Image 1 (cartoon, rainbow, N blue to C red):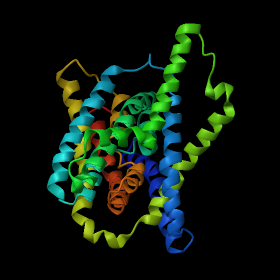
Image 2 (image 1 turned 90 degrees about the vertical axis):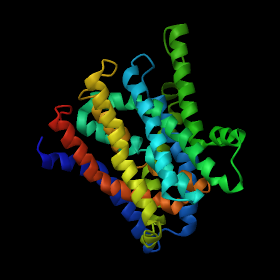
Image 3 (image 1 turned 90 degrees about the horizontal axis):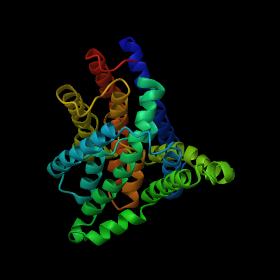
Image 4 (image 1 turned 135 degrees about the horizontal axis):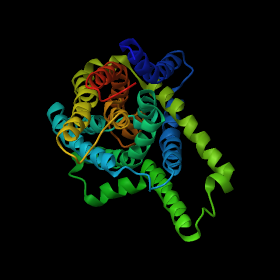
Length: 341
């Protein structure tokens, strides 16, 4: 594939996100989206849409047997390395607690579900999507758990260091965590039925189709509504006052994170037998480490008392500039013979 086609692939994956955010901004400027609508829309996305999306994504996994544990374990290890590096960068960037949590979240929380899987499909086809889906089922819950921790720690720091109990309660009560937990519970019950009866006796998708369709409709609604709300909340006038934080968060998310996540995979694959990455695995790693910060990060930040304006800015700017960094990642991997698109 030519370089121009590679760029078009990245643009086609990212521009729908950017254009929908822009629509939200224009509709707010034209008076179609009011502040009250944006406030309520935020809550709908966070408490209903995103949990439904996560539940359906986990519920739709075929089973536990087909999991490639090597790439899963590597992705988890690399994720925590990015979390550690992101923490250091965050502390060095700003002393403001409400901004620290947002920047730290930005460093490790990629848009795996909305943009990442589309990138994996474009770069590696169905096989790469299968790998990415398995990895996402383990890492997306981690994204949410560590996000709750990061926002809880820094948001509460002005009142003293939060207790372990308060952090655990924030995690347990978080709607996104509940959505993932419900999906994993259903997946486990499905596996248990196969083990005991030799077949699935009861399935939400098959036996209560109307429930599954409602959840799937909420999942479908979630992304465009979240993007419109984000666009409506975006203020260009805020860029100047947040410039240092925006630059730091953006560079860490779309430059440093992929250098760690993808670069270490290349080295480990090259010099050890523990991990073998090929044309199906690298698209999944690009999806996880190279995609912009998740749309839900801004929604979560706003609902947990952090700087939602900064979080919104980071969603927009990482989405815009990731077009170029993803293009660079693909070109480098193709040049090394590690990616075929």
